[in-house]
Length: 350
Image (cartoon, rainbow, N blue to C red; front, side):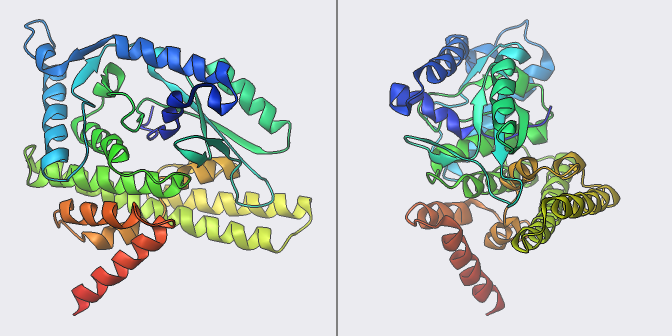
């Protein structure tokens, strides 16, 4: 199971019946309450003699990453990731449903108070997620259901480290924690692609800083974190190139049969490129499914622009603070990002 991403839409737990779907919200609230009920302070857990040494290392890493996020990266950490919750995988897995139109690269969206309009919806119940996906498919939409084992409630609740998340290796674990904590620091309502892509940058570049010169300094883990970020950006370029070709195809408004044939051919070509470059994620593009592609692009949009803010192995702390200040005050956060990147580029060239 992959990290999947922050299910920021879980902040809708705070909206109750104002969403117009009280039963859906109540179910999410009950599942979240069960998780919160099991929280234990990590500082107490690590002192227990019966705690597995590998788990103890992971928990200590999370505490260090949390402090690193606060002091070095400028994140608002609150009480999140200061506690640990032992849960079964089926209890913690959020099944994320998304949908998109077949004749254009445009997501189907839901609107909620607080988080705005988003292109996904989360369920703790797999059957409920599948029922929603089937309903959307009957409307002629491309649909996708994916699992996620880490999510953010945007600071509405003190998110604990889940035991299933703690099973990850050190580098992806730290990247996950930083990714989720960044959502508490910057969240632009109605801009899921910016929110998730910015958190990808914050999480993976933050992990590089943590393992390459921070409290988790380790040559091997530093190298792994650097490789991961380079691979993530390369994969984002392939997905973006594929998406651009699809947009041109849809803009030409071909007959449905031609459209389906052409997008299948483009999907196969994108999958081949990902395979040849060892970038993984072929399932995100083939067989063609606009919902699956847009779901992948949520986390991989304009990553090279983010990289310009803190190129190479530059400490990303200052860049992240600038990004929070600029994007949080603009209605178009990607425009704010472009402005910062252009300014940083001029400074570098000058």
